[in-house]
Amino acid sequence: MSPPRIAIAGTGAFAGTLLRALARHREPLDLFVLGSDAGRAGELAELARDHAALSGAPPTCRGHGADPGDPDGPERLLASVRPDVLVVCTSEHSPAESRTAPSAWTDLVSRTGFALTLPLQTGHVLRYARAAERAAPDALLVNACFPDAVNPLLTALGAPVVCGLGNVATLAAALAARTGVTDPRRLHLLAHHAHLHTPDAPGLDARAWLDGTPADLTGELTAVRRRTRSHLNEVGALAAAAPLVALAGAGPDHTGHLPGPAGLPGGYPVTVTHRRVALRLPPGLSRDEAVRWNTEAGRLDGAAAGAGGAVRLTPTALSALRPHWPDVPEEWAPDRLAPLREAVLRLRTRLRALPPSPPSDPRTTPSLQGVAP
Image (cartoon, rainbow, N blue to C red; front, side, top):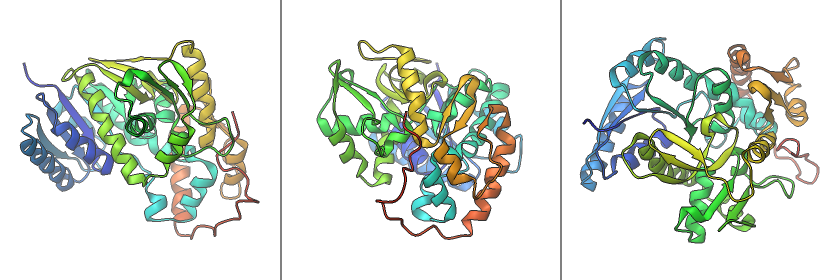
């Protein structure tokens, strides 16, 4: 029987670290890196093969490129590769932009919340999802681009997504390393993407349980968040390898945390088996309560998803946006993604040409995290 096949769409830092982690896996895997730049995809594949060889590991890796202007490019790639698991790690907005190229655009994202980029996070993964439906219908879709908010939209649009990567998994892995919790069954963490930053108001932070008992890990979370963001992202990418090999059937079942399982908002404790992700909630916490808490936590990113995937911006986000986008919709349905994407792209182009605002006095600046749950 041929080894499981995992395809990673994207050639950024998270995708590259994840690919190299998978290349060192001790069971056979066929790995593929898909990118708009064939040269970059080939370089990452070659580096992954080096990691496999130096580790004495059996995975193989190949790179494939597609013309970004070719609307059928992803479909042709997936028809050729036919992955068991497709991991999308490419979007039209990188969180690193605020560090590498600050502008009035990144300043606005900071003030409104990351949900402003939601249409830009969804486009590529939706394109790959539609291509997979036609060319690789058995592939399991995993989304690494703002999955806490994107995955519910994908589900509402009829593009089933099994889970996301990063975010709650990043925080849980870093917490486990810092606290010495070696048995992953001991830790349960509810956390949204927004909790990569410390919430402004007390009582809005991630919820943790240790050995089935609620635990205050605020100090540990604060220490984790102080780490260089590129280092924290590396932890998240490394932590993503184990659930992916479990999902592909190339490794043992995985106990841990993932964002957006089965299209749910936010991040949860989970168990991953071959082709399945199941919630692993602490004693006394119901699924409805966990989903409701994560839905409200999304407001810290500037928006919350309602019934049917409708997205409603918080008053804080609207207040920051309206000087730049007077007719910004307060609420929009998933089927409005395409025109909203065009509007956000136009706004970004205009604001990227302007410098960011000077730092404000924190004593007089209102909360930038959105309305409290």
